[in-house]
Amino acid sequence: MKTTTNSGISSAESPLVTAPGWRRFARRFRTNRLAFTALIVLVVLAVASAAAPLLAPYEPDAIDVLNRLSGSTPEHWLGTDGLGRDTFSRLLLAGRISLFAALLAVVVAAAIGVPFGLLAGYSGGWIDWLLGRAADVLMTFPAIILAIAIIAATGPGLINAMIALGIVYSPRLFRVVRSATLAVRAETYVEASVSIGTPVHSIITRRVLPNILSPLLVQISLMLAAALLAEAALSLLGLGVVPPTPSWGNLLGRGFVEIRSTPLLVVWPGLAIAIATLCFNLIGDGLQDSLGRETRKGD
Image (cartoon, rainbow, N blue to C red; front, side, top):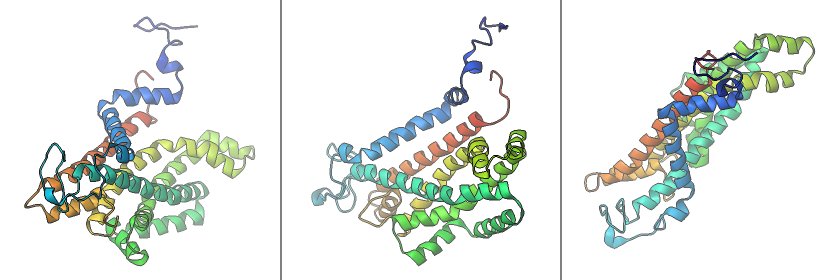
């Protein structure tokens, strides 16, 4: 029997009631204007960076000695650096490197933290204790200091730096996944699966993992922002992306050399880092609001 709401739409026909869960999530996320705008801005940044070879007006390493440290001109929209290289072209290519680096670090962190968090949260006992203590030891060290120590042992470079960051950030994902798994493990549907003899790997992949995606996605989005800042810091110190390959971090470091004569060389990469980081954080807040378990009015 259909019931009619005040707006004249029956509950059976209401799109918020009949739509699948992912559609309800999409509607909630779109209503969060800040998060949705941040997603659009981030997509534009990612697409522009990925299409850098097509969009860049000059080769990133092309040198124009006669226009060194020029300001904004019709030929060089954002000016040039100390070697006469076009800032806009290098900023586009640097975005591709920096965003890829942040993604790589989070993938490494997830590859370590998620499976071990699932194992610890579901198994409990001495396995949980042992993995928990290992995570606690890693988290006692400052993230950047531990990353620098790992890079010192493996050598500088983009891949080594991001693997180091992934190792450093993995305990954070481990703790989030472990905590969520402990909560889901106590649910009735998991206990019912155990009682009928469902294999453990099937319970984890089909029952536990889908129900911990909410906190996991939120943490990943926030971790992308942290990884982007960390990559910039490591590249600024000369431990990340090795010149002449540009990243937002080493462009920022190069800009500091010329900051007195051309301060805009610091502004552009700094602004790109700030915008991308803000977008990741706003998306994380939007995901947290849209993926929560709490009952929402109208759901």
